[in-house]
Image 1 (spheres, rainbow, N blue to C red):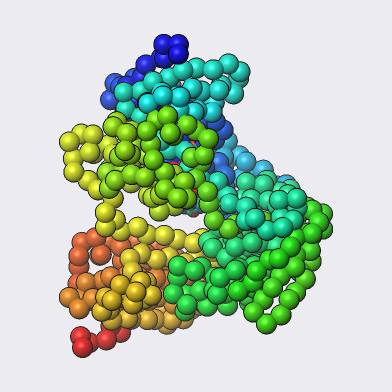
Image 2: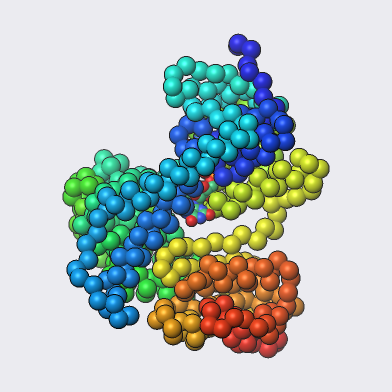
Length: 463
Ligand SMILES: Cc1cc2nc3c(=O)[nH]c(=O)nc-3n(C[C@H](O)[C@H](O)[C@H](O)COP(=O)(O)OP(=O)(O)OC[C@H]3O[C@@H](n4cnc5c(N)ncnc54)[C@H](O)[C@@H]3O)c2cc1C
């Protein structure tokens, strides 16, 4: 083997955690290289979080304009220019990429565009996008290669050339009838957005409810909100066969508990889970193990079995959010500086950016039951919060779980501003505050956060 180029820090994949680590290390004077095959800055700014939220916002504008008369604003007929929606998204993504390139330049981290494969411990061969190869070795190596959409092995699905989020965000037309496979947050965000742009939308979920990790009352509320906007939801639905080609005409044979149905549509979006990008990258040559689903095995400090090799973000099996990949970076950074941080017991919040959004942190009611944790449950409809009367955004509810020691164990909200309200409850949880502190706090009127006072006012007394 030729003599590799040596770096102190070598990072494969430029996801959320990897790029932050690169910039941090390079700014601290370490010779740093990052290998990225396609997305400068990783999935979040290019194809996942940011572009979805950008187009979802476009869809919200369409929704508000269609309902403007309710608020006393009269408009003419409403038309959607999907090419313009896409252009606005593309401009945002281009600006994000430019910011990333600037950070690479100013930090001194070298960004190498190409596909990396391990050929020996801590050694990568990179097939450069511009042609040729480079051999790189790192004193410390970090793997941040992310995941890609799973395409279930349903007969005819591959041949139908379904879209993933990547292609759906590049559409310049409104699909006449979009069929979404998967009732998780990726599928539901896109389902509502396309419905608002004007598509007929059918969501097909094989499980017994949408959002399988959420409590049934939460899933039920989400289904009701989407249903009222005209999104058709089929649960406990197994797809037996797909016919046709996405983008033209498709027919799905679907088995439900008590009937079989044919669903005709024009476009298919697959949002049925993720697969780690760990196959075929030579992890066996690096001494790095993966689990049965292909996720890299790490300890609670994100260290792999190979000394001096870490994994970050989704490929390490961390919860699949940008803020967790960022936290992985912070844990590694602090531990390399002598800290003792761990991934154990992390409080991981999450939002689904439907309208209204769903936000949750900590235990759900089902989690508490499964784990045998005694919890008191407080619940408040969003319609009881005065702010909702001013905006007419009255759908949804808040729910909190409180432990026997009065600490808040979990919080869920489906409702306007849920993402912001969540942060207040999460802060109280991080501070181990008893729920009475929020119940008795002076909260700004009229905001959705004000509802927390009423919510925690309904916590049942200790048994
Ligand atoms: C549609 C959608 C919407 C989402 N919205 C949100 C949201 O609103 N909020 C949120 O917190 N999370 C969201 N997520 C999840 C979020 O995008 C990820 O958790 C986040 O980007 C962190 O990913 P990561 O750091 O693990 O890796 P990634 O950001 O995926 O980066 C991995 C990088 O490695 C590169 N790579 C892979 N293999 C190689 C190789 N062999 N050689 C070179 N480069 C390689 C890839 O090209 C990629 O750029 C969303 C996900 C999806 C699918």
